[in-house]
Amino acid sequence: MTRKRKDKNTTVLLFRDIIKETLSPPPDLTVSEWADAYRKLSSESSAEPGQWRTDRAPYQREIMDAVNDPEVEKIVIMSSAQVGKTELILNTLGYHIDFDPAPIMIMQPTVALAQSFSKERLAPAIKHKVADAKSRDSGNTTLNKSFPGGYVALVGANAPSGLASRPIRILLADEIDRFPVSAGTEGDPLALAEKRTNNFYKRKKIFVSTPTIKGASRIEVEYELSTKERWSLACPSCSEYQPLIWEQVVFASESVACKYCGAIHNEYEWKARGIFNENL
Ligand SMILES: [Zn+2]
Image 1 (cartoon, rainbow, N blue to C red):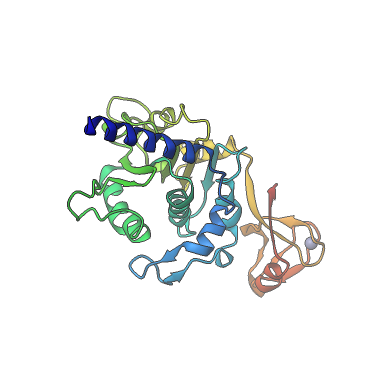
Image 2: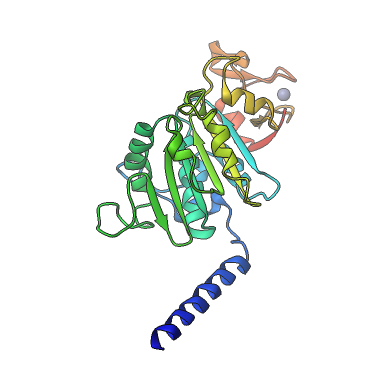
């Protein structure tokens, strides 16, 4: 009798939690605002530990906040190395753990890379958010971390087993140009992972990579299918926004020529006018 009542209470409680979770309004913060408030860079993984500041890399703001845009399902980031792509992934993850828990998958080219990513980058970033994998009964391993309301699974694109099981709402695929053509004999690993998001209305897919070989690049294909937004600056003379490209650099004076009016300004002058992101 007692036991029966207890079971009933548990059911009611769980049900109440589910309703609360489903009906609670979305948080007011965007991913970049979350990062500016809560993201701490650890000395283990950052040359400049301490509070994250989006202003230090303002080109990341629009990208991060696209995660909060209900109109956006896929975010494609094609960029050179060392511009903070990993931080974009970690900020998106941190935001979801704190404010919008979901089943999340982080995909790396191989299982070995997924393991080192987990230990070297993920663990320091979410240290106080998930139970330590080393502690007994935490339910967490290097490749599986749970947190209230969700979990993050780390998988390698070379291992079909990791791609075949649970549904996921947030897919974070890193260095997709290094993904194999097929995961074992199962087919395109990225397509397999995407399929797992199908049941979620609020799904997000974030594809990140440095482009490799022109014509055989996954990220290039995704970029071509995207809105192709590029980081742009306004000319200090004529105010036309433009992404600065190599051909505009004037080496003799270490400055950049405007592609519209030809005026030549140095880096400080270009950046002083502020920033914008638009289709060009
Ligand atoms: Zn100009």
